[in-house]
Amino acid sequence: MDCQIPVISIVGQGSNSGKTTLLEKLIREGKNRGWRIATIKHDVHGFEIDIPGKDSWRHAQAGADIVVLSSPKKIAVLEAVTEDSSLDEIISRIKGVDLILTEGYKRNDKPKIEVFRSEVHKELFCKPEELFAIASDVKFENGVPCFELDDARGICDMVQRFYGLP
Image 1 (cartoon, rainbow, N blue to C red):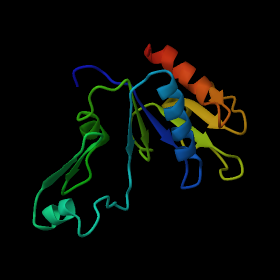
Image 2 (image 1 turned 90 degrees about the vertical axis):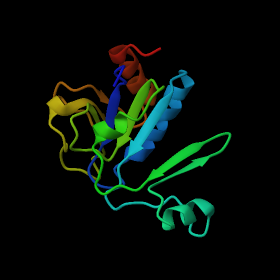
Image 3 (image 1 turned 120 degrees about the vertical axis):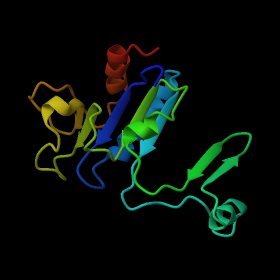
Image 4 (image 1 turned 180 degrees about the vertical axis):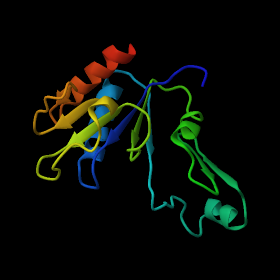
């Protein structure tokens, strides 16, 4: 990468831990600050965003390896792959943003914010040295900054200071 875009992974144990809810709040808060934000969501089960019968779906079904959907407001690139891309490979394709937030990459080497809800979890999934912060309904005394589950402003303040974002 030419310039280092900060990457922070939002992690938690299992579905319904609150990862997506926190991610939405962080995106909204970051956008209010004028940041350009990219998100990367990993889905181990695979996904389909193309609609059967539509032209782009028909292109892929005919054998196109890459299908690009373009409009005045969005562009999407659908690329057939033979294996899961690494997070760093995906990140290398992203340009022109201030921050990249990921969801579903628990085992990557990027700084992480772990979402912890005491009603769902017994202990933290990550080791303290892997964590940038914790968003939780309980406090932890492990040297890692701990925020309330809905404190997107506080988390973004820390991200802004740490990475020197505008």
